[in-house]
Length: 593
Image (cartoon, rainbow, N blue to C red; front, top):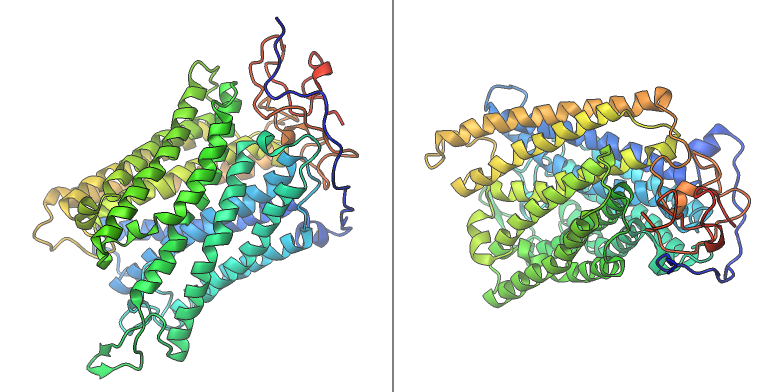
């Protein structure tokens, strides 16, 4: 009985759209600065996002110094502590993770994985990066304006955000709001590019149900962002007008320092609804690309086809849809009608079902697989553990009676960071270790990579596991100092010291990662065309790193799905997507057209 690979067909329909002519720059500036090549733009996004992320990492270290060793450092005062909290949160969630997953990995991987020459609109793609860079520079400029950056918290709740007494209530908040508006403009240009490219520029034979799950995750996250970011955009514009022109979209009638302010009739809760209508889909704007990337890392490094591919695709789509009807679980303490609280608690628990299905499928993919404990695989497995742990604490906070007493405590900080910080960052690291040989042609140092993983993974648990305990004790979040509160025992202060030491160690080990990136670029071991023996199209290019146009003279033709690993009767244990059935016994890396 002969084996037939999953979804294998000997014929691919002719292309519906002919190839477009690419712009080929002649100068260094045209190739690497004002580049229209999606791969270069992806690297530009990644470098910028990592650079601004390092700023946020330093801010978190300063915050931990104050919490662990209060009043020891004279340069940390209550005002700039709140500014550091605000800028750290906003940078990490929006300017690092969103930009890195969609702008970085999206630009680099989508054309390669779907067999396209480039993005459909390369010039618009170039502009999207420069608008993003301008947004980042605007945000960084807020550190240097009178009053400094805003200290209103990364959620920027009015009326506090624009009132006297809040750090950065003038120029600081305006620069953050305008920066967010430009970020969304830039993303919209890039996001439309990603969606149209996936829908219209796939190579022959690449049906939607043959797309790698990385592409599915980025594709769905982009659709979420295109639908959710407008809510943040309009709220940023309206709050800017409230602050600069005295309008009252979000500001009610107020008395400040005995004086009646000019505002009247605004609704602070309206801002919360608009912000969280963006804010909860934002969780999945970051999570869905991470889900897709982890699926591909596990399949490649366990040498096993992904379990339940169609179920995984439908789970991504269902999670995306449900993410728009759970936002108000962030607002239980705002005075919500109990019936609405019940509705949003129910939808919050329902969205856990397709998410749990993905975890179930990852575990079954690993089951009896030929697991290679490479550095990307370590980060992928670390993600599964961390995401499950963070998700379990989300079940606590999804229930109204439990969320209300925990809402303003360190328990929320611990949960949020396990789900939205440690988990996606582990995926980012795993993805970089996995695709670095394709981007540069060289392997990252394996020993440094494993050292980086274990210190980061264990250290992250040393930071955030104790924080759950602090939350149960009632230790409040966003407080500059908690040592004089009678209800906080000495054990909490001792834990804060230990957490701070762990955080500083984890922050310092990221320098090892940066050193590995730079050293390996020049002296790393050559990676070859396909060091992981992967099936997807980005590993079947004519050159490594891929040149402009990606695939040489002719585009590949796809004959099967992306997960033919450990196929019986195949010597190399994998079949690339572009290998015709008749040549299965040949060289698996050989490109066909």
